[in-house]
Image (cartoon, rainbow, N blue to C red):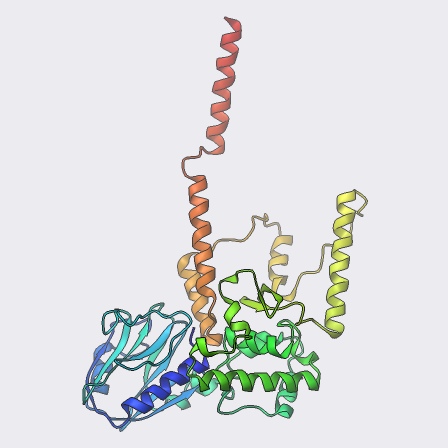
Amino acid sequence: MPELPEVEAARRAIQENCLGKKIKKSVVADDSIVIDGVSASDFEAALLGKTIVAAHRKGKNLWLQLDSPPFPSFQFGMAGAIYIKGVAVTKYKRSAVKEDDQWPSKYSKVFVELDGGMEFSFTDKRRFAKVRLLKDPASVPPISELGPDALLEPMTDDELVASLSKKKKVAIKALLLNQSFISGIGNWIADEVLYQARIHPEQPAATLSRECCATLNKCIKEVVRYAVQVDAESSRFPLEWLFHYRWGKKPGKVNGNQIEFITSRGRTTAFVPELQKEIGNHAANKVSKQRKQSTRGKGNRDGNADNNVDEPEADEDNNAEATKGKKGRKPQGQVKKSPAKRKSEESDDEENDNGDDVKEEEEEDNAKNKRSKKETDGKPSKAGKSRKKKVLSNQKSKKKSK
């Protein structure tokens, strides 16, 4: 999924192939979910006859400077991509458009034809991207709210230490994904730099030593710079990178060490427990808590537990859920969200961190739904089962009386 290296590859491709060319034709999709705040016809009219002067990027956002405003701005979302006809921009790990597909793609949201015959298209299969027409994209949200760009504005070690020290309760991975803290890092880059820095994704940011911070900063710079240097061509990433083994939540090993998957702050996270260990008081407290819960569970199984023993402490994120339970709500497992609500939540999440594993989670949900439907279709209700038992019982009684 597009993160800083992929968006930078798109910016460079436009800069190398499209600057100085005039827009002869534009076709904007009539899609108000992706085309934000302007009609397709007005968008097309604003581009026609303009010359592309420059291509800019910050974080995962790209905008084109024309010879006069307004300028088109692209927030790539989960599946946004720039394609230039006849030019290899970059090959995503998961790409919606293949070389032999129709041109422009049926997923095209903005298609532009330049003088001289050059054509490019911004596509978005999943419709989490946002395309806007703005007078000064850098001065308004979302770009104005972004933190320093991980490539163009790297932090010094001192700046990173100072920033992390203020985040006492925030897990380091969650912080790396926060675009207002540092922009451009998404799910795969966060997993990669934490693996290379040997830092557990749920280690509280403020507990990292200065040495760990320096290592983390070094890994962020190296991973981002290398990925940009090879134009985000994933096949050219070093073989020892976690990147090559983290997809699909499949069991596997990297450099001989087992990979595990957890959900960290709602995001699928790949890490290597053997190398990425939680440390300090945070780790000790976690172990102590797990032992207490294990002891309580054993006591309950043996029948020796005190009936007045408190329940295990709830995590901060689950306090609201625990409170609801105490008010008498019957525990029925996780409530299934409607597709519309789930899509909305994923979209909100995307605004902050441009994650790449929501598709896997959706596909898993869909598979579960199909299995559940298959298992329940054609089965009688509880009432039906009861009536059937009663009929069978009466039939047996009649046979005996005969």
